[in-house]
Every structure is written in structure tokens, then in C-alpha cells.
Amino acid sequence: MKHLRLILARKAKGFTQEEMAKLLGYKDKSGYCQLENGQVSMTLEKASRICEILGVQIEEIFFNKTVEEASTRSGRDLPKTGT
Image (cartoon, rainbow, N blue to C red; front, side, top):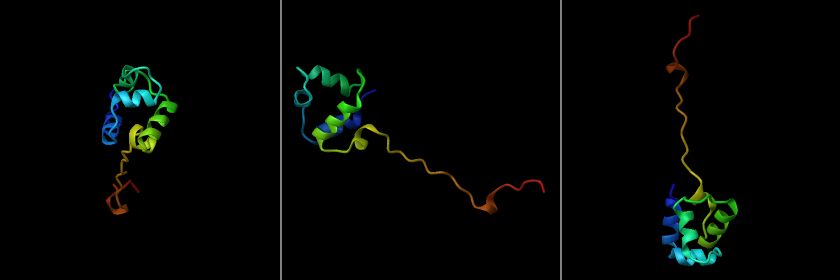
């Protein structure tokens, strides 16, 4: 699974894949490309370093922020039980 938020954040900050690869210690961009494309597992340490380079919080890129709202009903809307 591609890390689309990572790709967007990298581009928004003006970094190329080659630059990110060098900053992360890769010999060339292929190792970094594999991270972005989800072909290799992302470690927490690597994710932290990427976010440090990009100047963003780890939650912004690597965690789903979707919050589901619980559906609630008032007492008068609840079905009546047999009494």
C-alpha cells in the first residue's frame, strides 16, 4: 500500500526522492522508493526520522485520523421494552 500522505508531504516540503534517500542514509533512491510504495515495512524509527526531516508530526502521515462519531438517540427515541 502506497503511503500517499508521505508522498504528498515530501512534495509539499520540496524534497525529491533522491534527497530523502540521502538524508535517510540510502545509497540511492530505490530503497526510499520502496518505503513510499509500501514494498518494504516501515519501522517506527524510520517513520520518526522521515517526520523529523519533513518537520511534521508522525500522526499527520502515518496514522489514520478518522474519528467515527457514535450515533446516539435520546431516551424518547429508544424502542420500548416489554413492561
